[in-house]
Image: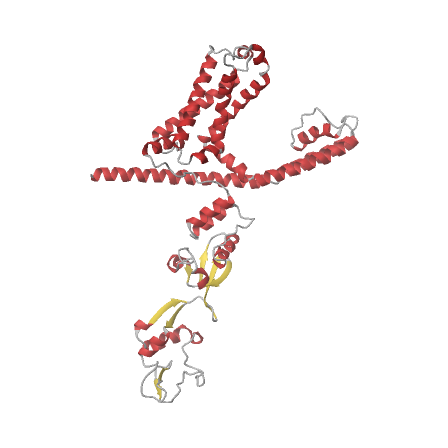
Length: 475
């Protein structure tokens, strides 16, 4: 409601209500009553003193808004300030009433003013949400999340996400109430544990251009072309890795004159050039070397050079024969080249971030699965000892049954064995289904976050290009 607050001694003093001259104690008071009749007293103590306080005609909230407005006619307009009073807390300031989708919250104005740049802390920002009929602020937002938002003001900056609210919804609530970009970034760093999409750029102009072309595929058309070419080379190397295991190529893959070997050299040369160029242009080289994707890139290149060094002249056929197993391992390592696609295909990045954020849920799933495998393998061994020679032998049956794969190489034949197999399958379905919603929620969050990043990055590129175009036209 609208109420008039009189600014204390200044307003009263300007109208003769404050300290004056000519009395015994140097204090005189003039009373403006509610009916508009002026009263003055020459007593040493006025009617507003604590000892002689009239029961009626006091300037307080007991008289309501109308009494204040009537009494304010006798005071100077510049001494009157009109505020929307939502409530009062004796001795503690104004109370604010907040309605969030039907749930009522109350707090002090001083609590919200701790963060004046936020939506609730700024009177101007929250003014449009004020409901004058119900004398409250109304927000059609998540009620459970707002409990944590209000605690953020009460605790002077501590932000805790409720367990029943997913990260995406809570992050939207933080952005809606404008708690600040630093709060959003801290929340993402703590809850999501990811690094920002675009880090620091090199100071050297040439290095910056190389870094943008090799690392930021959406920075320019040429960078997109380079990214497409890199994806093509990665797919080509994977195809070569698979084709060379065919019987017709299996015995000739060590021949350096075959077309497959020439294509392999071409792919390795491009991967080497790409890695070295990105390393030289990286603004933080130590961080670049320790990056997971960059380690994968290095691992995908090293096997070729190791095999090339071992196969160099000076090693006899007997020596080469002793390294057959080692060669097989090195050739197998080349399959990690498929992970290089995650640098250019954002879906794999989202999948990797989802798995990293869901690590606790995956460990929980593995623990439950291990418990089930041990329990059901032990039971089925003692019930079906004719079909299962040992408990470890029954592990495979438990795994394929709990995961509902059911290869059928080991099956129970008795009634008790089939009953145990049924319980094992049901337990496996429940075990796998419990952590899945959390993982799906994380994937949805990272997918939407990636869309927002791409959109904001594209808008930034467009604004930069339009700004250059405007400056060029002005020149």
